[in-house]
Length: 241
Image (cartoon, rainbow, N blue to C red):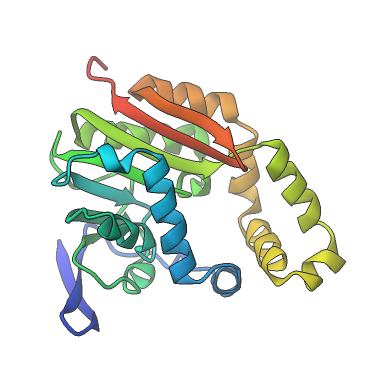
């Protein structure tokens, strides 16, 4: 492994270890629209609220938490605000990881090939990463298998992903209205982001039963619901797999 240290704030160094060479995976147009859609502070607040709803107040304060597809690290910042200290993040893009400043250990790596020991993590979190998998039917199994491997016995997998609900169908309809998108900048930004990831995004939405069945192969659901266009899932590691 190789390492790079990037200082973003005095006393706040993000140490990045490379499990593999980084890939150029930042879509400039997508990133520009993301900046229009949601500020970093808004995203951190969103993630903080999500974690609370997913039961973070019941997690052990010293839990070792791994955030996969962590990108800029705003999910890690949310976990910091909730009082967790043993934090790690994985993403393919070193460019995105470099935007994070904080105490978490970061890795440039593939979610389907984690360079961590067996049964060493208490909680693995994914927020909006699985719907980017290029080959869902093959890659989802690979990623969930690795998550299962690194989780301790009784470890938790926490997932939030887009889901086909009535609310999301309405949002998609609104995104197809050019006048509305021009009038409402946030909607226009969302429409552009969806268009940039169209292939994997809609394929994910079209395979709900496959996704749920694959999750149940590895995890025992503690919480599973769909609302406001999202699948919210918390599962315990299935030990006899």
